[in-house]
Length: 128
Image 1 (cartoon, rainbow, N blue to C red):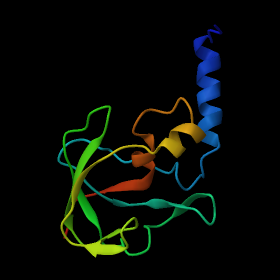
Image 2 (cartoon, rainbow, N blue to C red):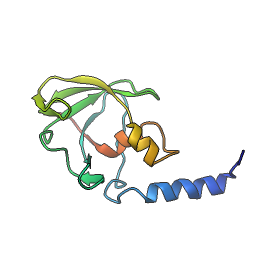
Image 3 (tube, helix red, strand yellow):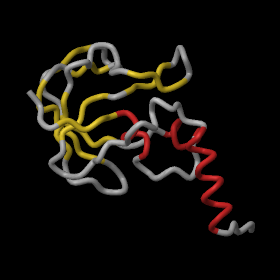
């Protein structure tokens, strides 16, 4: 088994982060309990990359963050409209436990478990 020294792991981790879009790296969301978040970016299948801005139909979606665990982040829609891409419906009430996708984890090995969510969202003071 190959063991990497700390400096090499740090460089390798930096290279993996460098592969993420610069707009995504601007500021990662704080997913602490009680914080509010809105979409900062979303995954585009057409572009095969993260793109700036919320996913279509979820421009006003604002979520309240629950108690984060390594497995996921409970989030409740506090205001706005959230578009459920898998059922193609818009909702004004929604809660679920969010986590990084298998695709993200495969494309970015070694990233912290909830890194995709920190990229997808930005913190806001409150939901309206």
